[in-house]
Image 1 (cartoon, rainbow, N blue to C red):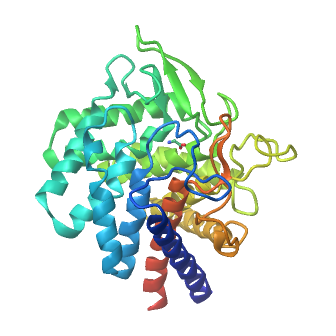
Image 2: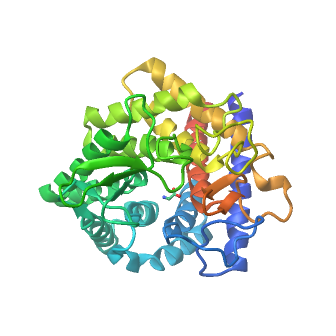
Length: 377
Ligand code: GLY
């Protein structure tokens, strides 16, 4: 069984390499966000420019797994194109951009200049901190906190750990606690957005941009929280952070449909038509699968470790079938079909999305590496 799975996952990774190689050959220096009818190049709205690190990050993943020098050259080249973003104060996505690119690059080389970029990116993101409210504001407005930021705050912890900067650590930790106390619910589900009173800092209400409703359970947001709090636990070793990730995981495991891929929102009506009803969201599945594989190594419960790992692999087993993997869809330029970007704006619905591609590759790479070790006994 382990061998069959290893072969299927390896074949999916090889397909992913071919799709990314075709993309960079067809559209050099281009960082797409989502496909339209399976094509990366189109004039559709971006909403916000946050996904460059995922394309370059896949190149690093490919290089690290295979040792291929061409992937290394491409990874360095595409990462350099993103370097100026270390000063970008318009997005809350600097963790996405730099932890998938400059971090693996720095870990491979130990070059000081790469380290400096990571530290600067952490410092830039920390500038989003709102004293009134005690959170990092989202890109949309000062009164807004997004659950997505949980995947980016790790770069502030990274910078704090590397520089022993206690103020950076305070900002990052305070943001996590505010997120937990406002938009992570007791049952482990999450709201997409929290809205605060700018004058008093008081938390006012849940809200959403990409979920079904303010009080619904947007699947990708839950994935961001599960994986984000697990990353923060890895960087802080604070049990209170592990507790949130495990609460998210419990909700995920309890509510995941039997076929292993969530609808775009856990409150979407599966009997209603897409895009607001029965629309699968493969990128949420890929994010959660990757997070669960990590969480399996973090939890203190052997039973939960087994459940997290099995669920992560079950989701990947489904995503590597031709229903999701584009390997048998001839003109499709992406890797993973049935992702969703923004339902309300009708952007990238039932398409390939760049973060879905990245976390799918990341999760498969983790699984293959560990399976290889297991297979070798
Ligand atoms: N971070 C934006 C999204 O998840 O679509």
